[in-house]
Length: 195
Image 1 (cartoon, rainbow, N blue to C red):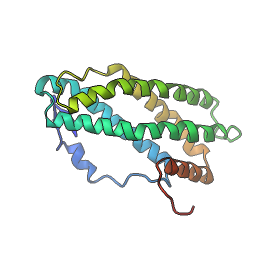
Image 2: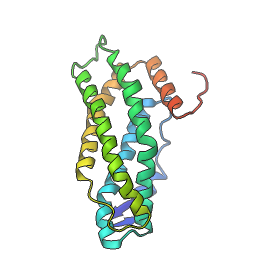
Image 3: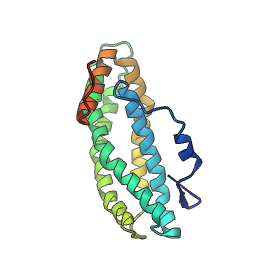
């Protein structure tokens, strides 16, 4: 669902393109899963940016309520797992790679920064959540612009996408990636076949 020209259009071409996207990565590609999660977060941020203007022009119509529901559902379900995937599993694995040729001496500082940002992003989400719930209930005036939180989230994702995930692809071996995938599956109560 995309908001365009100050209204939400569920039939926007990007929605149609989603029918032709390849399947989402699975737990056998944990770095691909993290990247796909980042893409979905960015999609929700774009909708969140446009939602206040839509509400001021069209009110909490069915499209606005549906958009708020999609944002709420994604951040409530995926984001907590995503942060744990990084803080508990990915980042420690990466820190264990100091002796490898692809090591970047900036990596520990980046990981420390990202881990330190997670609680603040979660607090920011906690303030937005009731506003989205109010939109779902039909409140036209509930959604303030979330410019600062959106910008912080984008900067956070940029660091992960531009530096951390590319390094992870070079640093982690097949066994470490399998271990990461198993931990991510376990966090979501997904049983994996042997491997």
